[in-house]
Length: 270
Ligand SMILES: [Zn+2]
Image 1 (cartoon, helix red, strand yellow):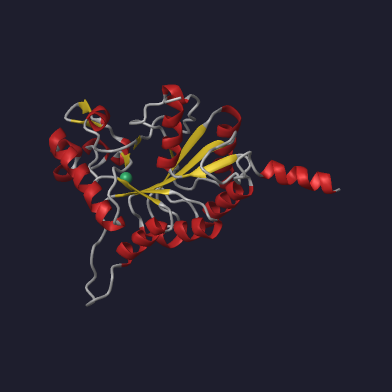
Image 2: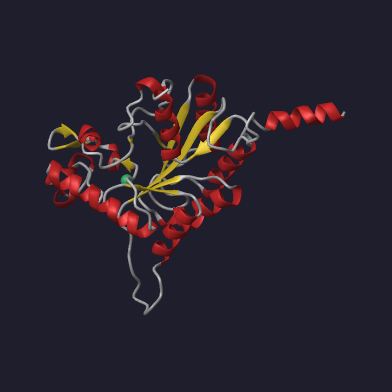
């Protein structure tokens, strides 16, 4: 009886005496939960759910409201995102003004077609500075392409981001439910993700995680609203999915996008 118990305790810890929640997947599939556009429901629904289960995620922020009309009262989004960063969530760069192509409905004046490469890169650098002020940490940030579009002025700018070392890694969209099979061929400036569409079910969310575990190595979820507009996923479905991941930590390493990519790129150096 005692030996059986000891066996299970040993299973739960690796040879360094660390629990499976530490900074290595140790045979588990890597799962990154990412959330775009600094949507309010992420602050009020997604983050409390994540925090209640001790899970860390990545939030790609574009411009947020900076002040209130009430004298001396902090803007909830400023306070909320600061707190999220303090709690170990990652704040990533999603540009300031979120330019996207006119062909998917963007107004001409704010569309990517109104940008030069130089203007876009300056905006991304500015967003790094804004996030560094918000989080009070100086670092090069991970990036997510607005609308998963990598083209400006007819050129793919993911290469420029790499050349100029403006961002550390970049998350892209890519084909639906793309699983990362091979770290050696993964472009860190175009990491594919699954854009989770409106009304996605718990079953679909779990199925993708299971497919990553059985066939591949890493899967990146791209969420938007959790209970509020924009590719809305129900708060109940989101919470149940987190519960599934939490209760299957022996199979999944749920971590921030940058932690996952630090791990992936560290493997290349060996
Ligand atoms: Zn976006």
